[in-house]
Length: 196
Ligand code: GRF
Image (cartoon, protein in one colour):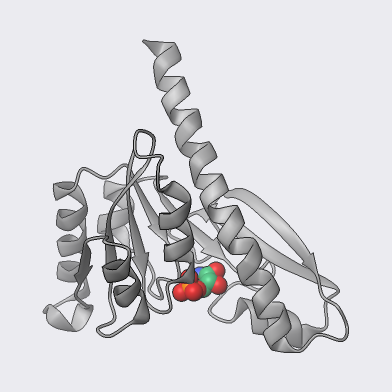
């Protein structure tokens, strides 16, 4: 299965996915990184990890539609099976959703449906809940609402600062995301085999 990773920032999940899939090329291959932010640290990580990277943003196009169509074209040229969002800070719209139905996966740093949106970790921390966590889900047209594939909880120690919770969440993400994707890919490969 061929995947691309879309990211906008630090790229710690990008790196965790690349490292987890190293040596599993017969099952899963990272075809490229797409980043919409010039100068994002994830681009440096791609260079260090020898993963091809593409960078452009909506401002390079005359409309958002053209931007998304350029993305569809990029993905189709690379014969992708899945798109993995890893801190990609834009909504996914119709041209891509239509081209990859149920094949765009996201990781979100809360137990959805609680704390959707951009600040899932901080919102949970500020609300005083006893636990939060990580969700891996399929993307659809509604923000942070697609089918949930997996969730893992973390208990918030009352002594923790926000940074402690961020560290705990990222530690879970880096292990859970590759694991869920690998399970998905293996399930699909085995399903294919049993049909033939
Ligand atoms: C992660 O917390 C992820 O859940 C969210 O954005 C963050 C990206 O972090 N969607 P990184 O860029 O992978 O370090």
